[in-house]
View 1: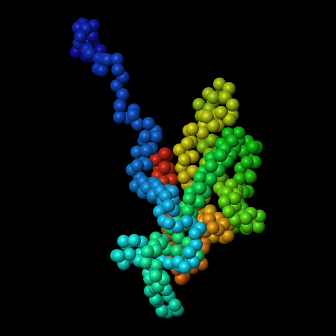
View 2: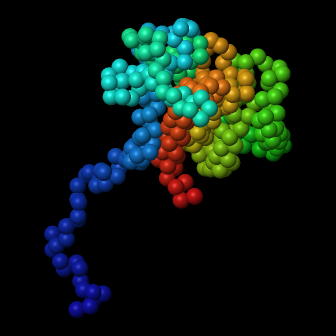
View 3: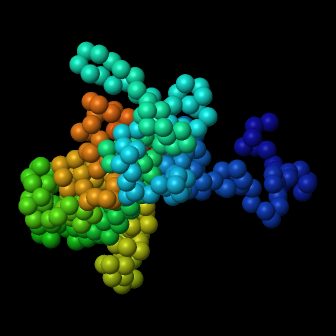
Length: 348
């Protein structure tokens, strides 16, 4: 019998039964429990490079916080009788490494010397060695790391307070205001860093003030560009139109409606700006605008040790390695956050 000629009314009432005929909605619990931030965390934890960077940052922060207290020296204490001593570490010296010996080259002759033995310093240990003024490099390296981390915090504050606000306001209002604001940013960004540094040497004295000014001049521009691009993409969305219809002010729309939707891009760019700020400090220190003595930063330590690189290379190795790991770690974490918060960028 054909289906169109079949009399369904002749069937009994219990011939059919509804599937899932209950009051509860059947939802994929596994999928429903995964929100955006949980998915991002899972993707981030799968990134081995980002995890390595995060561990290295934690280790560096730990030593920056407690490293100077691990030795009996301070960052400014000078013992002239104990100057130019190579690294010496307890227990490891029994293995023939880090025993205070260093190879000195006099012309074509190489001579291995041990300053601890020649000066009778049997109970003295400098884990990273001592500099030309008899100061403990280990203590000064971790004091300098504190300065570098402080500069990183300053860079984050500048990015968020100025760069983010500048880009969001420029993109939201558009028109002539946007054109003027972008031309100003392009003019600042077109000035070579060498010119800026030269002018700062003439006007400012070395120190944190010069570093902060250098970051404030051009450090905020990458964040403003990303914020403006995201604003141009989102300001025509339906939820923005609904907020305008309800009478929301422009500032409320910018900072309450749109900014929460670009928090992933904000976090990523902020993490990328940290190693840039740390490198800026090292560069300024190398040209003479670093932290004044007796304070130390990684940049000033590298600049001072560079003068003795040919005779005592160990002086430059420890601050250089810490600076390299610090910048590498922040870049790895930033890459991991970018891939976790916006997986589509992997294919770009």
